[in-house]
Image (tube, rainbow, N blue to C red; front, side, top):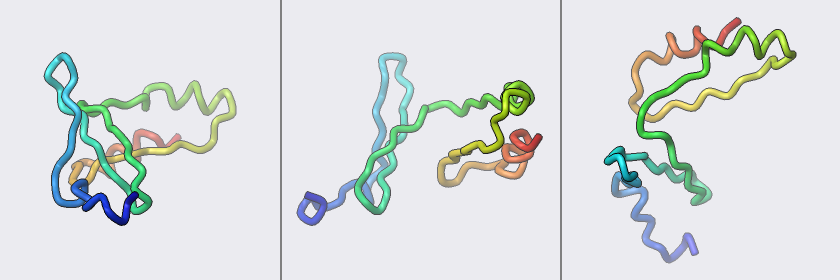
Length: 79
């Protein structure tokens, strides 16, 4: 359980290394749920016009702690 695990995820950087030697960071939230992020930044911002045309009005952007250029990323997702 989360009460007795020692919460190593809060004290250490944790990542999963794939067969191509790319580290994919793992982040744990306050409820001990784990999310694995892709090791290389990527975006689908170029698809925004098509998605908006098809009726999509809300987007979720996930950024890792310490990621730079946040304002530029958000601008790319603003139609």
